[in-house]
Image 1 (cartoon, rainbow, N blue to C red):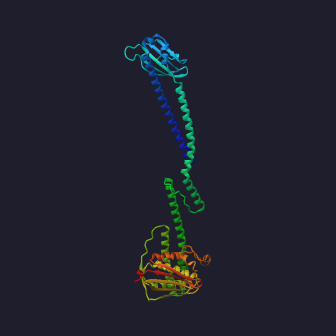
Image 2 (cartoon, helix red, strand yellow):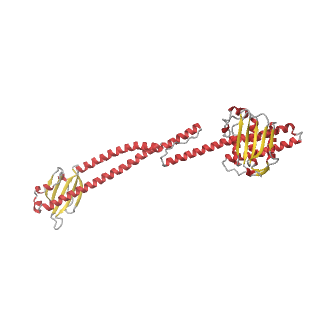
Length: 451
């Protein structure tokens, strides 16, 4: 059974039980109050007889003396102390058959005579002193039961009407309560079918538990979407970052296969390059796996090294693997820095790799100081980038020309990753380019890393 049906029918059933109990209470209270009123009326009639009719007239047998005190549709009987009937006036046929219960005890009796319910009040006469006889006042209760039946019909009719309204209201209430849940269910189905992440539209003014559940659902969807994007980013970063070390290892392995066994210098250089790239690939894999598991990566440790020879080592790897010219120029013979070498190396590899892809001539690396900052320029004389595209080249997956992806294998991640790495080093990455002239990417590092 659906929750909507359960809410509708259970609420109606609960209301029905409550109405039944209420009706029983009202009918019982009405019957009790009415009988109390009838008893008081009969007792008052008996007192009037005792106070206004003389003793001898009561016992003389003249019914006219008690006629004025007889209730409508009722009866008055006078008994002697020995139980003999001495006077009677009847205003309703059939009441003569009412039996005699007691001649000494005061009280009320409820009986059924000739198919009708009657209420009888008996009082000793007189109440104080020597007992002479008994006054008995009786009245039929047809009117009472007619009123009780009418009240019961009114209660039943109004209860049925209220129950009908409760069924309609229960359906409306179920729709109101379950609307956010239905929307949530449809949203989940849409997410399952389309694979797109969607949030539930929520009213701004509602503050109930369903609103809280909807907000929690939207937070969960947002977190799932972020996790999904991080996984996609991980796959893209992994494919981009691991491509260069694998290419270097493959190139040096091919070089060693052809010449390494005959030339010890090439053999030593190749083994060193393969070992270096294997270590770098291991480090990259560790960082990527840490990012994928959403665990905090241990902070990279800064170290002191000589920058020009550091860049020369990276340039030599590209010279060997691509057979392209990479020149390094510096305004100082040596520059010692203290920074995270692995991140700086990763940035230079990305920039050199891009320069190789989009140019055919020599690549130039310029290292110099300006306004107490260290600048490393990577310059090519390739196709360049138009002015309209320059503000977007650091965006993830942005490509100036989609055809480049097919020609070079790029996916628009390199410059985005490089900028993030440079910013983590406390610097910034700038780019200048002109179409058909070339591109210069500048690593701008703060002065405090210089020694």
